Every structure is written in structure tokens, then in C-alpha cells.
Amino acid sequence: MTYLHPQYFWFLLLLLPVAIWLIMRVKDNDASLQVSSTEPFEKMAKPRKIWLYYFPFTLIVVGLLVLVLARPQTSDSYSNSTTEGINIVIAMDISGSMLARDLSPNRLEAAKDVGIEFILSRPNDNFGLVVFAGESFTQCPLTTNHASLVNLFKQVDFGIIEDGTAIGLGLATAINRIKNAPGKSKVIILLTDGTNNTGDIAPISAAEIAQSFGIRVYTIGVGTRGMAPVPTVDVFGNIHYIQAEVVIDENTLQKIASTTGGKYFRATNTNSLKEIYSEIDKMEKTKLKTENYSRKYEQYIPFLLIALGILLLDVLVRILILKRLP
Image (tube, rainbow, N blue to C red; front, side, top):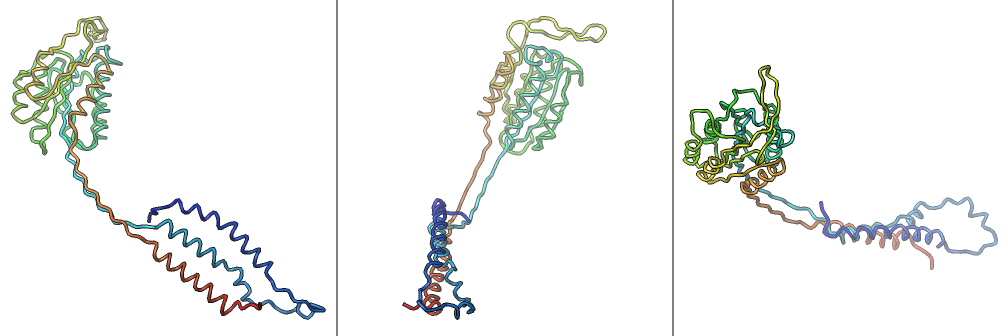
């Protein structure tokens, strides 16, 4: 139950001084009778009906009238919402160069953190994860279980597959995972920091396949412009960092995006990577249809009738029971 005018309940605070006034008035309203001695009346029992004087009929009526003014209401509500989630597969490069430290703490960890934030910000979408280096595999198929996906995302690390950069193969694996997904909206976010140097599928050929299935591909080139601390492995398997030029095949990434109706972005630091995901989030909106219906019913009439009944009872009690001498 709700109230259309709940502010009227503040009037109930006025009942406290009114109650005190009524009680004091009844106590001081006894009729006086002059007699030579009151001793014969001292042992007389007071009639029980005298307590009706203290029964606060007026307070109850005023309280109920305040409740009527507040206008209690009930409502029937109806809501119908339809949500169509977008299918999104993130294809992420996990080659050795992704350990470069031009993003904090490195490219791979920054890509993981920002990707997880993106997933958690879109609870209605189906997400999948493909990782690639010298080869590719599906880390997580399309799912709405984002908690499980995030756990699998966190487990991604360099060295779990052969090193290299097979961009075309990574894109093809992502296409294979999303092409038969239900719904019209199918999106791949391809993130890499290098050039295609291995794999049996050319990146442009994979882009044409994506176009044939109506899949839109957003490509992200990760890495600063110029020199960056890039990891190298010595003969003992230890990783060392040296300054090396950042080389990203931006022309190929731009062509992949334009072929599929997507867009190419360059992430030179962690903040720009977050901004890129934010821009993709704005472009790929989840479809949501909502219908709401509500009807209010007034519920003050029963309280008004009770107040009138108590007021009538008060009048009858004073006429028939609490008879007073003038």
C-alpha cells in the first residue's frame, strides 16, 4: 500500500497535546455538590462507565481522518521486458611481444583487465574468448555465465601455446565460434600488437569470411608509437627487456575492420585502451524493449467509514450512557 499524500501524517504529532488536554479536561470537569459532609459518599464505588470519559473517541477519529487525507492506495502492476543480447567474441593475441611494458604492467595484463571490465559492464550479452599466438584455440565458448568467463580470462597467460602471431588463424577461430550464434548481432573484437607471421589463413581472407556471415570485426592495435621495452629470452630461458621498435600491421587491421563494417583503433597506453572499449560499448548497444502498466486503487473509503462510525458511537455513548446533570 502506498500513500498519495504521506506528508499529512505529520498532523498526527498534534494529537499528543490534544490527548493531554482531553484527559485534563475530563478530570477537572466533575460537577460540584455542596453537602454538610461527604463521608457517606466515600465508600461508594465509582461506576465503570465513568472510564468511557477517558476513551479517546476524538483522537481515534482525528487519526483516521489524517489517514484518509494521506489517501492510501494499492496498485496493480504489469511489466514486460524483452532483452536481445549481442554475441561478442574477444580474440586476443597472447604472443611473447604482448609482455612489452609500454602498457602497465604489460600489454597482456592490461588487455585482460580492460577486457574483464568490458564484459562485466554488459550483463545481457553473450561473450566468448579466443586466444592466439602461433596457433589459436577457444578459451571459452559463447556464454552468459560471465563469472566463469572472467575466471577463464584471468587464466590466460603467455606460453600456453606456441609463440608467433597468427592473426588470420585467430580471427578464423573466432568466426567459427560465433557464426552460428542465435541473434542478428555478431561482433568480434580482435586485439594484437604485431603482424601476421604464421598460420595457414591470411587475415584478409578471414575478414571476407566474417563479412559473408554478417560478422562485424573491431580491430585494436596495442602498443606505443616508437620504441618500447620488449621481452627477449636468452639461451637459459630467462626473460630480458630491451628497447625495440613497435611494429604493428595497421594497414591489415584497418582493412579487416573496413571489410566487415567495423572500425580500427590504436591503443598506445592503458587509458586509451579503456577509451576504445568504451567507444565500442557505445556503438554496440543491447536491444531492450520494456512495457510498464500500473493502475491505482483508492483505499481511504473504509477508513473514512470507520471514522464516521466511531464518531456516531461517541454521540450515542454521550446521549445514552454518559448522561450528565446540567
